[in-house]
Image (cartoon, rainbow, N blue to C red; front, top):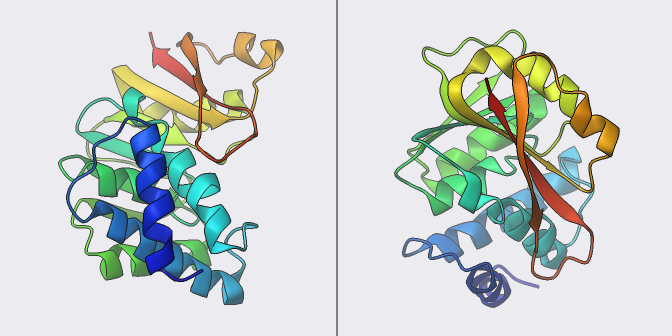
Length: 210
C-alpha cells in the first residue's frame, strides 16, 4: 500500500466519524503514516507495522476523541509516536498542541514529523510529565498511553486548572478504576468510541477537576 492508497480509507473513515477536516488534512495524515512506517522499521516506535492498519488503529482512533476536546490549549501526555496529538493537530489547526514524551527516540521522531508536515500549532517537549511545568494551565489534558487512570491524573494534576478536562483513551475501564480517582478529580462521563475499521472496544474517560 502506497501513501496515495491511504487517502481513500482515511477520507472514508473521517466521514464516518462525522468530522470535517481542513483542506489538505487527509494528504497530511497519509504523509504522517508514511513517515511513521519508515521510522518504525528502524526505531520500533509502534507495534502496528502495516500502513493499512495504521489508518484505523492510529489515525481514526486518535480522531475519534475530537468531540470531547475543549479550549485552545491541548496537552498530549506520553505522546509516543505523536498519538493522538498529531492527528488532532492536523484536524484543528486553530488549537495549540503540546506533545510530551520522556523517550528520546520518540521525541525526535515527533519533532521530525511536525517539521516535515509543517504543523505550526505543535510544540514537542521531551520530559517526564511530573517534571514538566507549563506557563499556563492546559484546557484539555489527553493520553492514549497510560495504563492506570489514577496514575495519569496524579502525575498530570498540576498541568490543568479548574474547568480543565482530562481525557483518557482506553479499552474498557474497570469499575474500580473509575471509583479510585485521586482527590480533587471527579468522573464526568465515559464515552464509547466507534472507530471505523476497528473491532476492539474503545472509550474515552472524561474527568474534571473540582
